[in-house]
Amino acid sequence: MASLNGGRRAELVAVAAAPDDLGPGRVRGACRTPEGPTGLEIRADLVGDPDPYRLRRHVSGPLTYTLRSCRHGGRYQGGAVARRARLLRAAAHYDLVDLEWPEDLVPELTAGIPPRQRRISWHGAEGDRLGLRTRFAAMAAVPAALYLMVLDRPADGESASAPELLAHLGRSDVTAFETGQGGTWTRILAPWLGAPTAFGRIGGPGDDGTPGLRQLVEDYGLPALPRLTDLYGIAGGSVALSLSPRVHNAVLREYGLPARYLPFATDSLAGLLRSTAALGRASGLRLRGLTLKPPHKEDGVALADVVSPQARAVRAATALFHRNGRWQADTTDLAGALHTLQRSGVDPAGQRVAVLGCGPAGRAAGLALHRAGASVTMVNRGPERGRQAAALTGLPYVPWTEFAVRGHQLLVHATPLTDRAPFRPADADPGTVVLELVYRDSPTALAAAARARGLRVIDGREVLLTQVREQFRLLTGRHMPLGTAQAALAGGEPRTDIDVADEDISVEDISVGDISVGDDFQESEAS
Image 1 (cartoon, rainbow, N blue to C red):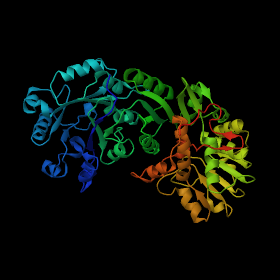
Image 2 (image 1 turned 90 degrees about the vertical axis):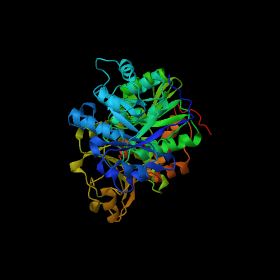
Image 3 (image 1 turned 180 degrees about the vertical axis):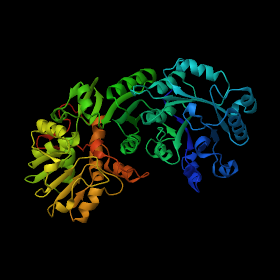
Image 4 (image 1 turned 120 degrees about the horizontal axis):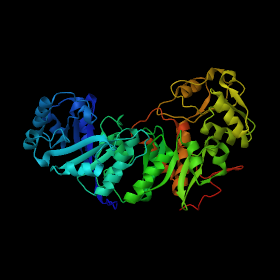
């Protein structure tokens, strides 16, 4: 079992995977950071062969040359003779040259590239004829400085084979992770399981699941590897651009808790729980809680041992956490929109409100506003979800085609639309307030149009700041300091088109009327 006691530091490796990554200043900025020298990997199958002397002027860390073939997940399609010639030329200038197992392990290359310059890699499916441990043993029979195993994630997403392999091997010369967005968390976690390196793309997150280099530092605290015992995360269909890891991990680091919050992109919440449980048995790491995004909000209710009355009322959960030996589900959606309005000085009591979007976040917002004394109408494009919302909340439902903007004092936007307005703000009455449950770094199309009309807009970033604090409390039992959350959201690289209506909608500890977050089983909070 790999040691998780911390004290080590991972080697950060900046990956140049697009021609723009080699532009003026990009390499220098990526490889000279306050955290120390960063190595550079050139994906020659994607960017060609840059001048190694120019690279040396800007990179003090080790240089790695990779000519990934199509068979191993890359784009190199040339012949074997040309490939071997390029690899041998690279050995004259690079610290490490990636050799694909078993095709590249031929006498010509092993004679020309000594073990200290070899990184032996394999890319494939975990379910093929050779088991992973048997395959690694065959790879390790050839001396090398490093070994790399990249696993294709199975279609059902139910796997944690790479982390389990690292935990079993307990070696400091091997890295293993899984591909795709569903494998991003395995790349981030690998250094805690013994892997010597963490790879981050210069240009930001990649479609293959590689996180951005700045994400590794700003969101996950690498290259430092403090003691780790617990895992938290955000689970959804798409979480690559979520701001939640940045904020949660900033607070976990401030408290000095032995935990990290990871992005779990998965189509199966049950599969994720099974695979992380297997990892826990292999490594001692325990999954303690999840923020739930669609399509898992309803699944959280179905899988939990204990469900709060609020989550049961809207048949959806935003948080799933393990406490007292049981998985517990709760939702903070009911109070999320209401608390943000109150902090902004808006009292919904007695006002006519339309909630556009009848997913879990919309249903919860509608029910909360109704309980606060508003006259609420649910609006949805699809009639099936609209009728479901009406049945669950007892609120009237109006099809989108019959909805009239005029006559409402508050409009709640709970759809994923960011690049076009879901209604014409010009049709709204003067003084109407627009509350968005979606956000991006620049104003959404609705926010821009509504402000141009002179309407007051409360955007999703204001909602997120209040929501994420209570979500942290539910998962960990601790308060999230407001200043830390604000600083984390203000820093780092921009993220766009992030759907808060589909993300973590949660609020700080409040009770409004009969809406109380987690009041049926919430444990006392740590100071």
